[in-house]
Image (tube, rainbow, N blue to C red):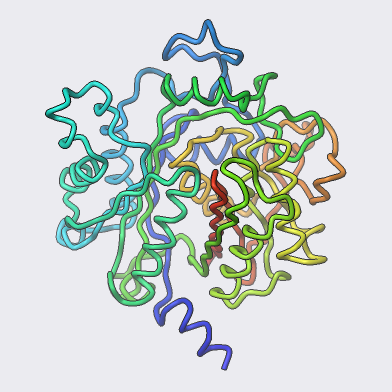
Length: 395
């Protein structure tokens, strides 16, 4: 009976993660980002990309130079497809699910040309240049956007509607969104993101462009591909509590976690790590801690938890996919990302936080569960009460 229920909720086919591509403040490629996350080495520094003289906060996690969102999306999609071993013919049959804030050129476009810069047209351009199939999707729903894209892509693959899907996402810190978050007092005044820590003062924005290939396990096996991870489950739920404040008891996120575990047929005791949303806000972190306690029960106080935003910042629509890349890479490395910036415990967040490694020991975090029974959750929340949970495991 249990297998029947799981198949009905998830679909009959297993979903695996193939190649990955990424850009972050630490450079291009997965390894620089993973190294920073494992060491707890934050990438925040002064913003030089645009004028911040009149702002309360002047820090973000920026990739050096003047990266172009279009070019970087093209590059990470090509990197992910290449790492997955996709031929041109297989790419041609593969849809793109893209999460972005929008076409950066829209604000500068003349009114008569704005339709050409709609987000759907932007996504179609990325797909066309990558040699992917048309008819993909665009997601602009805030901080859960790329996690929602992953969940939709996984559902399509699991139910046989697609053999494989490329999911990509991108956000490069720009003046308008920086100004909005700064004016709202959401940015960390001390220039550090300190998730779940006493004394935390908010979030900081960061560059993030990422792509992953999701594929049916049977299709990957048939072409001799070696998956990076299994996307075992996914879940989404809404709170509808407040336009920007989270529901204090974390009920919506707890439901999303529960749905992901149910789809994966995984009990809380098999969760070996949680990459939390952990933006560093007082209310948000406390609500997320409450959600984990609610969803995982007694296990929650001993499951290792960290937020990789503590090193790479909040990449808005791209943040969830960036964090999924970190989670998969960390599981494969057998290490846990550090929850950087801790000043002391917050009694309202009674979680087992991954702390900075001993400076005389190895330059990485504690050993992660690398056995086939070990799974990790990657969590995302957004304004308006959106919550998405992704469950991955190493094959």
